[in-house]
Image 1 (spheres, rainbow, N blue to C red):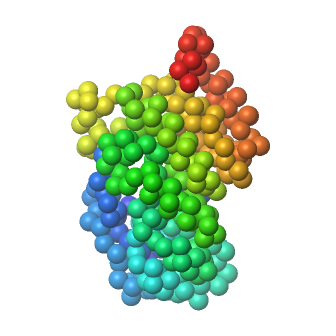
Image 2: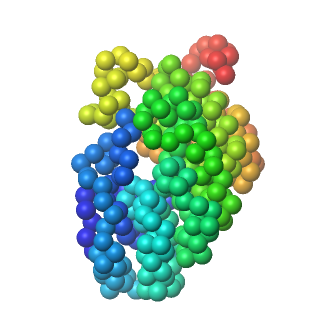
Image 3: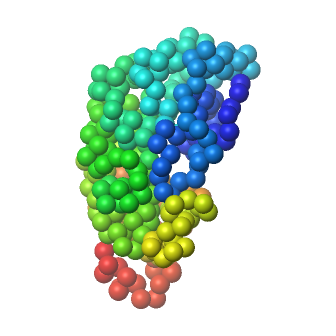
Length: 289
């Protein structure tokens, strides 16, 4: 099997066999991201993908899960994706599910019928970094999508029967847009009703456009306690049903997790306690939200 460059996958796919079907990110213009800057985007040849799947079969007798990389492999035309999924199922009939990254724009561009076909051929979860529900923030970081596209696409995935795991980046609005980021994000999430929600915290990566804005003073990053307050504001207003919520990425200041709505109160209590640990003047801080 041949992997080109560093290959990323969601934490929950850590035990999955990774099949690289695209290289890099087709958008690759988000101001905060440095993951794929050294890769030129391409969709791999079908023959090469088939060869990797066959090679994996020679190595592994049995595979329970497979993840299709790189950044947004869902951008591949649907019929080609179906051919890849079909090849996987023919060689690994025991495979219980196949995951994939899909940007909000990729999802939006797939029809409901296309998503239903992909589900029938074994695709059982799409991971998508929406990052924010605020059009102001999405535009500022050059995400290449809009709030409306995120909502429309997300609802289509849920209706197709494919599970949807969404990623939100805390602090992405900075000090200027943190309230808009928080309020619009929970509103978008409540409309979509994802199966999974994961929080990450903004990291200042050297060499990114955002790093230059931070160094120039144009973008002011939130302090740790402000990140927690922003996260609490989002969590307080989430009205999710049957959703697993996690904040266990290495970038986060607090590891939390549970199922909504039953664990909501416990999660909020934990994050409130952390805020209180960091601040003597908790009342004035909590009045912000």
